[in-house]
Length: 132
Image 1 (tube, rainbow, N blue to C red):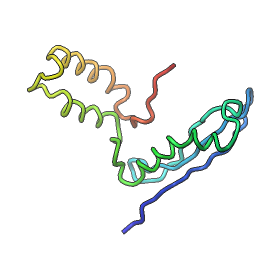
Image 2: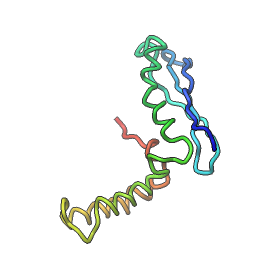
Image 3: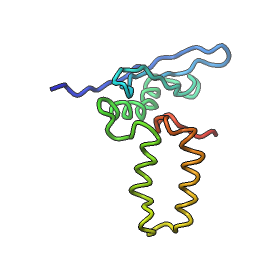
């Protein structure tokens, strides 16, 4: 039996060509082929996050996410397509119109099938972010 894996990741500063240095958090994830893949997330500048302790607190969310998704990908689906399929089955069954009207469901399905799935279907949900 394999021992459960817990990773702390690493936190370090990285210099930029222009602007202040930034704090970077690095960790590894298991991809869909079962291989370990290096990931990194920029947490903020050294002006926004002045100490390493503050950087560790900012990285805590990513550390929890990395440790939740190690191994068999339990917790979040591997792709947005899987998440949408689950949503269609559990939250929007067409045989039951409690909670949402039929026309609302049809509009949601149209947007999901024609716009969201073709563009974002194969991406991992954690890798998708809105633009601010």
